[in-house]
Image 1 (tube, rainbow, N blue to C red):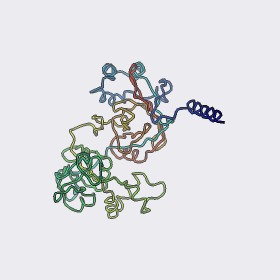
Image 2 (cartoon, rainbow, N blue to C red):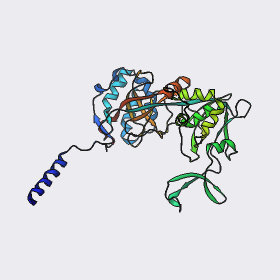
Image 3 (cartoon, rainbow, N blue to C red):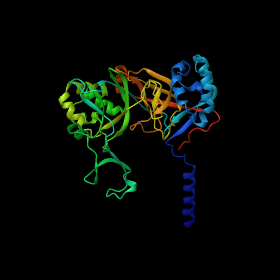
Image 4 (cartoon, rainbow, N blue to C red):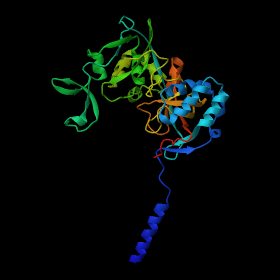
Length: 368
């Protein structure tokens, strides 16, 4: 009987070893350019600005590609396509065995404002407060244990959480006012986006993220849904903005329930907002990704649909990140600025996939 048990155990171990390996959270499947839907129809001259921006300071594996790209930057689509096919290898990105993922959209918020407060422009955009303190709990004895980096202020000799959104709006805050804008709802959406442009009499001023008050983010959609204020099928950001604009008094209370508050900085003159890759974003050619899987600066071929069901099959570049962009097949498509971009970005939540394009002869990102 003992021998039988030993034999059965051995067989069981063999069966386990022969079983298929668990699916990987990030994996690459090499394909050909012919397998990329719409590849021959994409206008690659439109993708060239985004490619060149990421090539301004290339990493070693991209140096040869970028040097050659400069030589074909003014050539027609046909020659650019020939060059890309000669220099790059496409890989379909998989997550746990699936190529399909979720793609949302974002845009550059556009506001109107002034450097001086007046009757029309009376909503402040703050810079970093002078009393905002960043504390690394690893370096101090904390009753709550190691919580990483937390934001707060020193009050009566003690480290305290910083003011919430409601507290900042109700009392004075020790922070410079960079600009005054004319619409509280648009300013709130700017806080969600993290960067944007303000049109003033002196010209367009770009503002970008400088920091936050350390409190957790609570989405306005979830806040409104709890109070039963969103009708079925009307939970997109354009619908939310319209409701808030039409109900200003209630809107103030709802927006204050999101305790997180964003502080800004004025950016140098640029042709768009600055992405996490350190380059300005290109409308409909820049993508925010999860950098744990996709290195910033990597060209990707995106296959998805816009919120109106139209195909989006085009070359984009990973040039930004986002707190909600998590996963190997997950992206946030940059639509640009203005009302049209807002309407597209605010409604986009599409299924799709993308292909990572990597230099020939170089080892692509490791699957795991």
